[in-house]
Every structure is written in structure tokens, then in C-alpha cells.
Length: 157
Image (cartoon, rainbow, N blue to C red):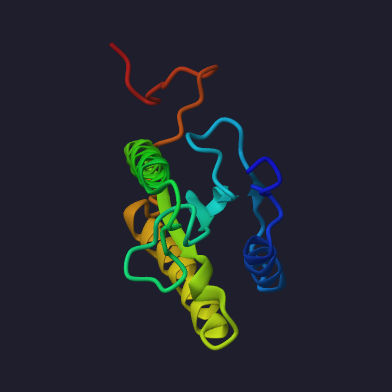
């Protein structure tokens, strides 16, 4: 298992190239966020996880098949991965971050473009919703000059 890469995997590179070509800028594996998300888009307050179907236990996916040997070990390992993923996403959500999970099977050639377009639309939607939540407000304030006192002319006491 030490030979299994956790960064710069083929599915992650596909997502990165697509987002960069669409003008999205991101950071990789941000160390200050829980779980070190694969991609972090600070402008959109969004963390993107690109998960392998086997390692993260993608339910009802043909690529998630438990090995026939050492079944108890693999069940426990994948359950720990699922629990860890859920806890990390819960922490990110409590910090005000949006979490998006892209599965490896969603990046297969037949459905790749649909998945990536959907990801871009989701990011645009998040950006527009955040704009609605925090609209720009202008407040009219009376500008006072501190150096000059207000004097009324023409009145004598």
C-alpha cells in the first residue's frame, strides 16, 4: 500500500486541468484545513475531494469491490476511511466551507465531460449564492470636519 499515490493521481489531474482551463484558481492540499482537501478554492470557500471509489468505499459503484482475501481488514479499513471523510467534511462545513466530492468513476471517459461541466456550474452557483448572502451596502454618512467647530453666523447674544 505504500506504493499507492495520494497526490497527483490521474483523476485529480483531470479535475485540476479542467478547472484551470475554465479560469478557476486553487491551492493543492491546503495544510490548515481539516483533511487537507485535494483542491481548495478560497474565493468560493470550497474544498474539492477527488476520491478513489475503492479506497473511500463508493457505494453502489462497480469499482468498489472488496477483495476476497483478508475481508475483515479491508472492511475495517474502508469504514475508517468513510468515517474520517465524513468527520473532515463536517468540520469544514462548520467552518463555513462548501465540500464537493468527485468520485473516480465519475471521471471515466463516458461521463467525464458531464461531471466536469456540473462541477463548474456548481462552483458558479456557490459564488452567486455567496454574493446574495453578503450584498454590498452603501451607508450614507454625514461627513464632519473635526478641525472646524460649527458656528452659526448672524446671531448675537
